[in-house]
Length: 120
Image 1 (cartoon, rainbow, N blue to C red):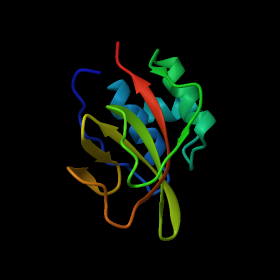
Image 2 (cartoon, helix red, strand yellow; image 1 turned 90 degrees about the vertical axis):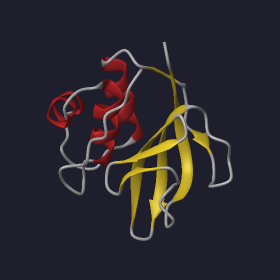
Image 3 (cartoon, rainbow, N blue to C red; image 1 turned 135 degrees about the vertical axis):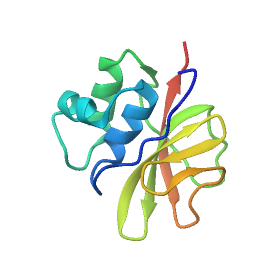
Image 4 (cartoon, one colour; image 1 turned 45 degrees about the horizontal axis):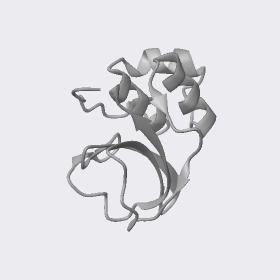
């Protein structure tokens, strides 16, 4: 996990797959095959794909909000006005598959929890 390349989610349902693709440096199509879904993802889908790539992860999601200090690398579960969304947080930057690479979290996003990832 030395360098992250931003990937925009190809459809409205692929934010989880795009987050894993960015952290694993792989294509969204490959992550879809590993997860077995091209629809919305659950925590277990993301954990399965991360394990496939050998990416070390916390055993559980950590509850959080927009004021919680975040670990250096994590995948955020956020709530937007009409849906849930996954965002990769990497060393102070937000790699949001829908809204782009940002220094600050999208203003309408409300953090619910995060899955911490560990660098080797």
